[in-house]
Image 1: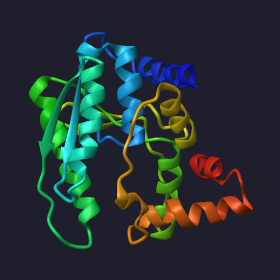
Image 2: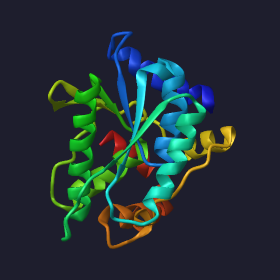
Image 3: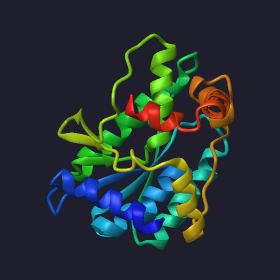
Length: 217
């Protein structure tokens, strides 16, 4: 499993023809996806080319402890780690606000250190969930690109889009990498959480390959 994940990430890096001296911002949270990214990505490109950045949205008291997991893993691998606090207002769009504030802070940090890429741990399951979100909102689903411009000369790079969450968890068990689960990811009041824990499992009971079908869509 480890070799497969490393192979996929390496192929995605090579497909972009990224310069050998390019710097990367690794967006980390302490969750399973970002812990997998933090373990695998620097091993491929070199630890000295990476800065791990954890964003604290100030929404949950436990977020600081979750970021500590990322910080400890970064330190163990000899990777610099920085924690950035952002402000998010109240309201029904709090998750969207948090996302926008997070990306703005990551772009700012990338410009500050001269990094051209912000790397995230988005995976194949995220793609399937995003397709359903668009469909439920009446939108036309669009493909989550592996790399897309974010402005100011910085691109968002998602090298794990073809890797399933199941394989990510297997990788973390293989290397005994600790991770945290954001409790908001299990809260059904958020559409993505409801899709992840209720709608998709129900769909899988009728169509076991539904996640693959959705990512193709």
